[in-house]
Length: 322
Image 1: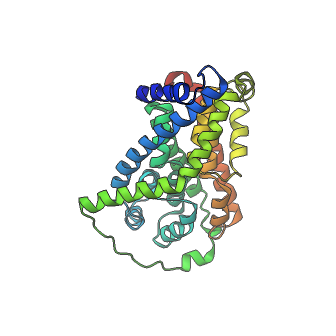
Image 2 (image 1 turned 90 degrees about the vertical axis):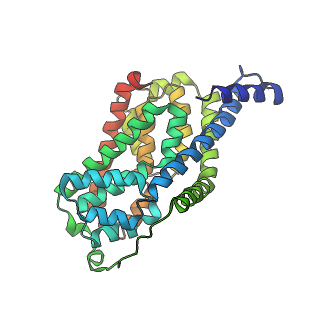
Image 3 (image 1 turned 135 degrees about the horizontal axis):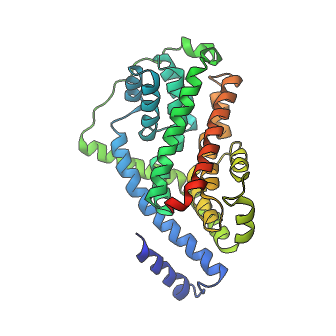
């Protein structure tokens, strides 16, 4: 897809910077500029396209849709809506309160809360640029499955008493759902491109910079030995390390790309990304304001185990999708 860009960056490194592509420095510099331009191009296109679709699903409409669906269908719908509905750690409390106040079942609410931070247009764009459409699509599908299964299990445990009492007593009130014209939706999508890129570019450059160092300098044999797909504990360790960290997931994708190129199992790298995204420490701290420690523990355990299984699955089928 980006053969022209690869050749252009090779010319930049060798002719403009005067660095041989056969050196570690040349390889790292090429990785940095190639990935930066490639990711920004796809990022802009994907954010615009999915934001246009997202304009049809503001949080208020999402809440109204989920109010009417229960059972497993509710978990499936909640997880699917998590793909196209904006969500970040800072919005976890109002979304949670709004869903509970509207009568959305706890399990359905968690299906949404699990999938939404894992799967977003920016992450999909970078995965598409870094790994190709197969891995990008499978990553989205597994993110949805993790949300569905996690929500079903949490719902079956009937842990409504583990939600802080004041949440049930709050009245969020109704917000008018504004209908937009095609022009307004396009403007919304363009504004979203500028907002998201403006918010994440520093994380992106840091991640690409670290990825470039790994690409050029990290010893492939050591990484393959200890974090390769044949190490049975690699995925488990990656998830355990990822859960307490706080990092923008988009910045971890270029790192994952570099690690995979060095022989790290694809499932190991993607499981780490999912753990950082879905189970970040700031999100847990914020959720503590609306749910009790026991439910937080169950949420982390269920989601963590699901991500570990996804990681092992990716490692097992990697030869079929790369």
